[in-house]
Image (cartoon, rainbow, N blue to C red; front, top):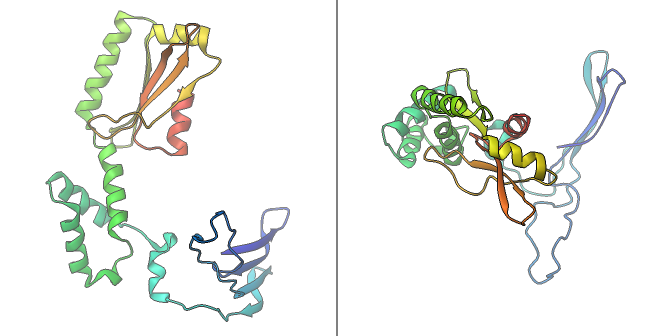
Length: 242
């Protein structure tokens, strides 16, 4: 891991210290001394110091003696080394839509690669990809039908607002809508707004994201709502801006 680094004013690297991720001491965050939390820290002093000089990285000191066992063959489990290729993603998508269970799909990949140790990912990575792909699998027809429904709502009510976020393939990613009553309520009771995506999901597995306020009677009121395909910074930024 990067233990310390320093940059020039123009952002170029000046020097860096790379150290073993098991270095240092673990912080004891439990008050129960009889049941301490497990830790990977062993106080390992293995590290490399380097400086960037005339376009090359020059090693200054190398201390390569670890105080624990090493397993280079397990480096494929590091997050930076785990990758699901485009070919594998297409195969997983096809199998999932055909109703083939993930454990069978992953077993096929293991067989083709000649063993678990030859795959740069594990079954959990495959499941995470399929979960995200399912969120995006609301087809063009479904998105079109939803857009038509929102258009009808806006025709009936000028205060109705909606916004749809599409991906490059025309598939629906995120939705936000608010009717005239919700928008009027926000003008009067918008000082405090709560936001929660853990309430429920729709049939496509997209989290429901309601914006809720409280009126002068202490009652919860809906100020707006969304359906989102992912719970990351980019998605929430789009939703809040909408």
